Amino acid sequence: MEPIKNIMRQGRSLWAEIYALYLACRDPRTPWYAKLLLAGVVALVVSPIDPIPDFIPVIGVLDDIVIARLGTALAIRMIPKEVMAECREKARNAIGPSSSEPSRWRSRCMIAAVVVAIGCLLTALVSLLIVGLMILLIVKLAHN
Image (cartoon, rainbow, N blue to C red; front, side, top):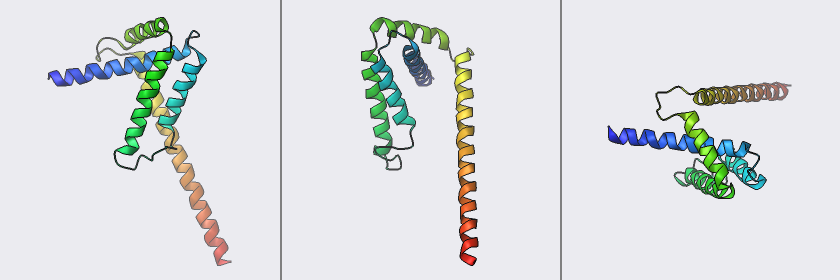
């Protein structure tokens, strides 16, 4: 049971660090270049365009992990220490010491994830519809 608790503790600390970085980006004392670097890291990780495609075993996912880790580590060094300390404290308070405590922040993240998933599904459906219509048009023009 101890390994599971350790994994859960590490997961909470990761969420706290991500939320602290989000709070630091919203803080006016954070330099613009740190904000730009974090925005670039997030864009690169969630972008469908990859330097090394994800379907290549191991290396495809490993490049995202390395870029995310190095980019965030560099951004944390660029953010003033007092700002990062304040943001980490706010994040710990927002997330809570235990995963059993409900958090508005977690709820908002879940809602955001659902909205993004629905958006992706709608985009895929519209794309399929457009491709289907184009195929019908091509077939119709080929018979004329």
